[in-house]
Amino acid sequence: MKDSLETLNFSNSFAELPDSFYSLVSPTPFDTNAQLIHFNTAAGKLIDLDYDNQHAQFIADIFSGKSTLKKSKPLAMLYAGHQFGHYVPQLGDGRAILLGEATSSKGDRWEIQLKGSGVTPYSRNGDGRAVLRSSIREYLCSEAMFGLGIPTTRALCLVGSKDEVYREQVETATMLTRLAQSHVRFGSFEIFYYRNQHDDIRILADYIIEHHYPDLATLDNPYLALLVAVTQRTARLIAQWQAVGFSHGVMNSDNMSILGLTLDYGPFGFMETYNPDYICNHSDHAGRYAFNKQPEIGLFNLSCLAQALLPLMEVEAAKAVLATYQSQFLSHYHFLMANKLGFSETSDEIQVLQNQLMVMMQNNQADYTNTFRALCRVSQNTTSNEKSFLSLLNNSDEAAKWIQSYKKLLGNNTQSDTERQDFMLGINPKYILRNYMAQVAIDKATNDDFSEIDDLIKILHNPFAEHASHNHYTGPAPAWADNLQVSCSS
Ligand code: AMP
Ligand code: MG
Image (tube, rainbow, N blue to C red; front, top):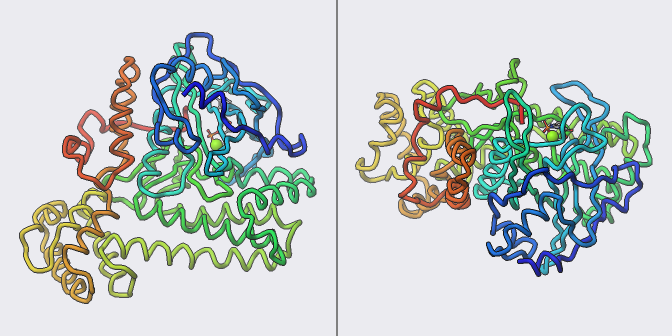
């Protein structure tokens, strides 16, 4: 591991952009000893790092800024963004530092970013740190999303310390190492639009196209094609969030990835009891980022991006791209929901069934994930496996009738019952990252026991498998978790 870190094929293409895009700044190591809390071997493989625990201290020192990776050129990226609907003219990495990009033997480039790595010129009044609690949440959720097949930044490792940081109470500072093919956000473009630095918009668009959308470079209008591609990816991403019951919590345009990744995990939440109005972020009093608002907020954010790209395209052309968003979102969403019900494509009848099921879930306060999982077991010819599905819906007459209509529709399927069940079990996860699961890992880690993180990563990487020893994590939140709240504090 030590060798592979020392020989990492490392560069920093972002640092070759003009200096208006970033500030060169080094991470500030912890005052106390850096301790490796967890190393994600699966993410390590992306950049050819094979973990061995002999070198835990070396890894902790590298990924907390105490030691430096050769050829790294640390910088904080500049961006702005619309936060809760209002333009904030300057944000930027206030507590994250991009070390550079590792190129794997396969030729994939991964940016390596430390989060919680100390103050930068963009820290405003912040301390540049991240606390253990929020770092564990981001760590687990990035990997949960990966396990669910949803585009996301990845988490490489977590390094803890005894450095004190002040939030609502005294907590300890932690650094998360994040990997992404790019951390560029919609807000990275917005800042140059509002500053009237139109050349920089073009330079950034060219950079993104060259590195991440190379097929667009030869098209007639690559910039418009970029907007098309980002719109497609965003529509698909948000459809995936909705299908799995994920709420991002802070869908500000500075948290929207130009690659359509789930980015910047803060007060996110996986919906447990089905409630379309679910608000995961305790600080979001108006519910701007409620679960069922996410699709329209996606369009709002894309409009912010389109506005910023206007110097590169005709306004009517940009509007025409945005006008495709809703139908793209809906077609992905209906496709994914039809899949969750065991069908390979959607139809009006399936959508009627789907809506009826959602209403029943809401009325019966059913667990979203468990209801779909239980549905996987229902078989066309017997009633023997229907019990748990029906009991989640309080054995209502309505649910019994619904099953009959559902089975009737299944009759049109060409797949056998077992094939359909297997297909559904591979789509409807048994495990999601319930808030209380993260809290168990956090509480243990606060007492220097990091075992739960490792356990959870294993099941979240493969959330469709049974993992019978972890059945307790499929249940509704235990009573102690009733009042768990997550907010922007991190
Ligand atoms: P977030 O809500 O984490 O996406 O952060 C919004 C903005 O605030 C970003 O520019 C962050 O870099 C910055 N920020 C958040 N927390 C801190 C902190 N503790 N110190 C400095 N900047 C921060
Ligand atoms: Mg952010």
